[in-house]
Length: 119
Image (cartoon, rainbow, N blue to C red; front, top):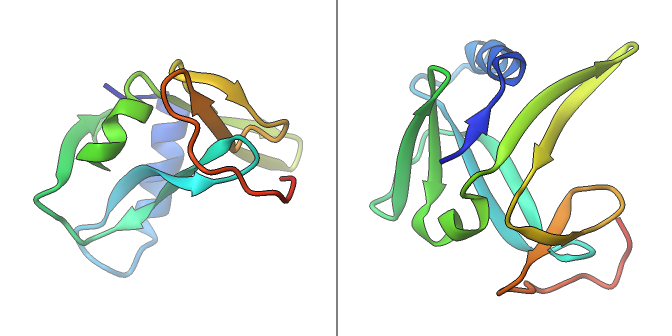
C-alpha cells in the first residue's frame, strides 16, 4: 500500500487538473541509478499495461509496475511548503540506505545500480 498525505494529494490533484490529456494518473516507480542504487520515478501518465498494479489513494489513481511494488510498499508521500517554495517528500520503509539528497535508495535485498556521480 502507498500512502499519500492530504496535502500531497491536493497538490497532485491540482497538477493533474492542469494536464491537457484526459484520463491521466500518477505513475510511481523506481529506476536503477542515483547515489544509492535506485532512484524514484514519479510522473503523470496515460499509458496502462497488464504489468501495472492500480490503487486508489486519497481519490487519486496510482499506478505502479508489478516489479516495483516490492520497493514501494508502505511508501509515504507528503508535500511540504518552505517559504516561497515547496516539494514532495518521500519516506520509504523499505530503504536501508539513502543518499544525502533523498532521491535514491537501496534495500536490504537489492542494491540497484548506483551512478558514480553524486546527487
